[in-house]
Length: 83
Image 1 (cartoon, rainbow, N blue to C red):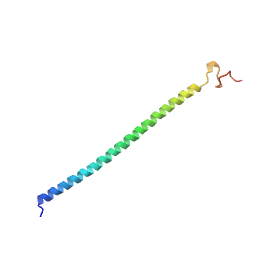
Image 2: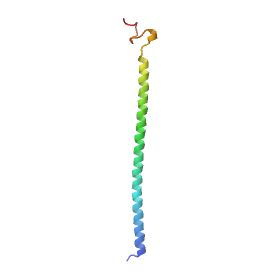
Image 3: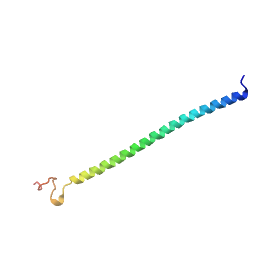
Image 4: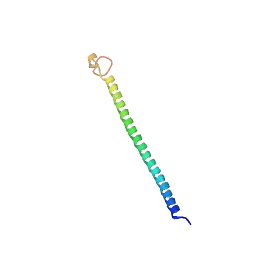
């Protein structure tokens, strides 16, 4: 026959083990969520950087293609202005 003390000890031991298991699982869920949120924020920032770089490149390309009015190049051709 198991004594009252031993039954209580076993109950406390089981509760402690169960609690540790559940806390560990909860910690893994939280860690996974933090990881996923961090990844999404990083991807969002990367998208912003890529859009900014594309905008700068488009502005630079547009500046290279603008006609040079000072040289008489109003139609975008390299030769004399067409009449």
